[in-house]
Length: 369
Ligand code: CUA
Image 1 (spheres, helix red, strand yellow):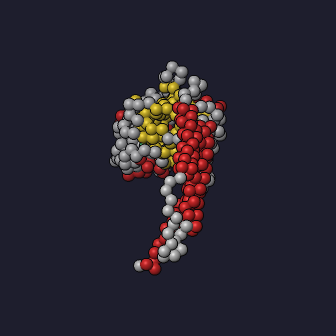
Image 2 (cartoon, protein in one colour):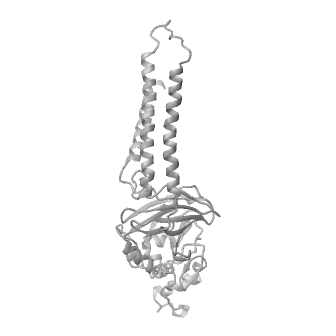
Image 3 (cartoon, helix red, strand yellow):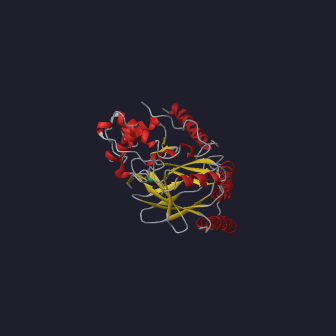
């Protein structure tokens, strides 16, 4: 067995190096060390000096240990170190110097905490509500009224401060878009806040960072930062007052001649979808995401699936199979019914508003047969 130990150690070392290497990849979408906004950069500006102070302390202390190991090692059987007791000089040094270092780190950290806790009067206000397992966004006007209701994808204008006011509808969640900000808890009955701001138009990825049940790992989020003019268009197009396209209710005698969209709309009302989902002018369900502008979103179901017809079909067939624990039950829909529902969902919102730059493969195609 003894022979194999160095081999085990080598394997362990290689694994650690591989892990370290994976963590160092610079161009990853959730790299917290690659800030792309002033608030995340301000956190980075704290991490950098604290890391280098810690690194210097590490090298100094480990260096002294290595030095002592070689310099004062036992050279013969009767070798004994010189016996000493106490040194005021050294004891003062190793008490005062670390205390001073900690004071510097503490002052930097506390001033940063106060800075990040500030609420800016010119910030756009968005209420963020965590749900098992998706995010609800309510954009507020100056009077605190909701002007736009969205889900999973947070659209923000580039270069503008956006204050997120976080709470939860069920259990504790944690909102974390690593390139834009640190983590803030979404707690039932409490209102926490964080301010974010993006440097450039881009998709920013994030995820729920607190274990919140079966599909915690499937609770992702995207922040879509866009030029102010594009954002204004998105806000206008997502008005809560505009009713969705209306379709006539399809009676069973008219199934053969009715359009897929109209059949889907009828199924939406008959199969219970409307009990949980809101669609302006059609349904007021408040359990699941508001679907009035569903087709304006690039992703769905906690931002884990690209909003294309294949994913939507798999989802409508059996939601809990796609996202374990999903509150949306399996509805035992026939394939033809799913085709109709997809056609109807494609009338809700405008795919051109999914956000620039649009990742490849996200454009909506015609419903699958
Ligand atoms: Cu929500 Cu983890």
